[in-house]
Image (cartoon, rainbow, N blue to C red; front, side, top):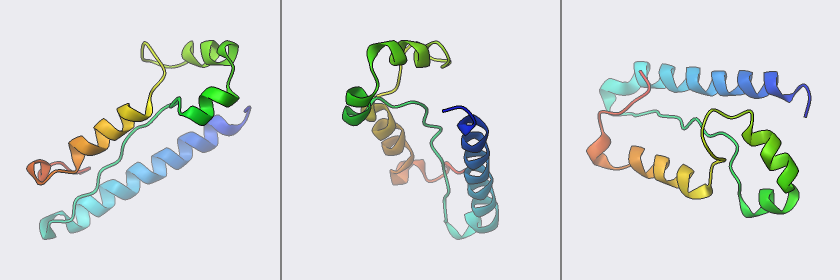
Length: 91
C-alpha cells in the first residue's frame, strides 16, 4: 500500500475542488454539489480480506475511534440528499 497515500489524497482533493467549482458556478441555478469524506470502510469484502491484525494497524492511523461501516456512508449521503438540505453545497 506504500505510495497510495499521496495518490489517494490527490484524488480526494481533486474531487473536493470539483465540487466547490460546481457549487460556485451553478449554485444559483439550484445545482448542488457535495462530497463525502469517506475513510476506511469495513464492508463485507473488506472484513474477509483484511485480518484482525491489519484492522488494528489501520485503526491506529485513523482519527476516529473505529473504522467506518457502510451504514455510516449511507447516513452521510442521506443527510445531504433531501430537499430540506437544499442550502447545503460545497461552496
